[in-house]
Length: 497
Image 1 (cartoon, rainbow, N blue to C red):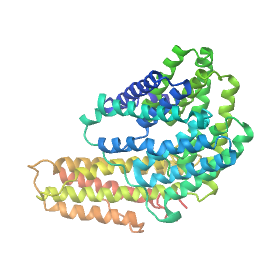
Image 2: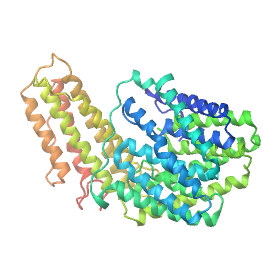
Image 3: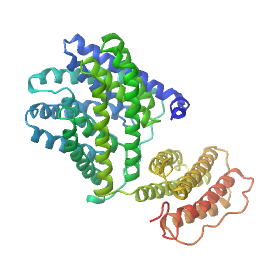
Image 4: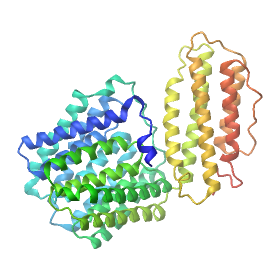
């Protein structure tokens, strides 16, 4: 975990820029709220709104990011109104919170924008519980949200829009398909609602004041997961990060006793840590989130060791709710999800190969570069889906070894495809008549693997010296080697029945 934090690569210092811009944007939002005469709860609301605007909006284009940012208050303010208006009506408040939870997860079916708006809606309701918002405070909270989103947008799209100098980001792969309850996002919406309902009831038995921590833990465990295994691993990492964050909070935040200046510095460090570690370690990110919450409670004057122990208990309740939901309510198995992503990656390998071969044959319209970017995105999804199988706590060494073998061979496929595409980009590269036959063999191998047919995939002969053919032969070899770990006697292509 330490290695992932301090040694993880940061190409172009993107994570560093992301984190530094977050500190600047959130700091500006809090200052603006202060200048507007807002109270401490109003400034906290504004700071969290700016954090979400900078953290959750992830559209592949700057224009798309701007549109999504503009829509955040459109979604958040009605939810904030409902949360404050139902403050004195616990049953209606709880049912509305569960409805917002389910809708927020279901919105993921509409891609990054739906995900961002769903997270913002949920967190707006959560913040209202955090601050015990009532209707008389709504005007101040409305102003805080609007001013903070504007401040965050000014930093992101005006003062420091480093994305304009970068190549356009590849669009994330579309969610796995299906209709009705066969759609993963629909099943997860039902699971999240059920898990949040369990966490809400048990969380209220643990604490009538801080029960929303349990619901928040369940919600965030479901974010960016797509299978039973991913959710369970994320729950474990959330609890671990919370434990570490509470330990650090006892050493750092509690002794400050809410002193404004050092606590503000600690909050800035936590914000930087959240944004800098989010892409590489969920455990580290949760450590910083827990320390941030601890610091905010210090500013509000309610921080104590007992409160931190209660947060740990509520986090455990939320993790238990998520675990029971994914195991018992419309389960989405790790095998089914992983198998689907692997098949999409293999089909993309074939599409990359066909485009590259057409380019080498002289086609002016063939362009394999977008396919390569798509392949990288799909392999990222495969790694995320396979993560539970290669987790150190996985008690099944045979499945762990098979999953690692699959990942290594898929990386080999990607390396050969990138080499082939690089050669195809050379205008002086000549077409070899053997390319068509090699591409046909790649197509046949991919069809055999994705269809689960029992016939073996033949290993090619030694690759020739011609570079394009050498990459194609390397790709054939990797696909042939994939046949064994992707097939078992039960015809299950990765982890068994």
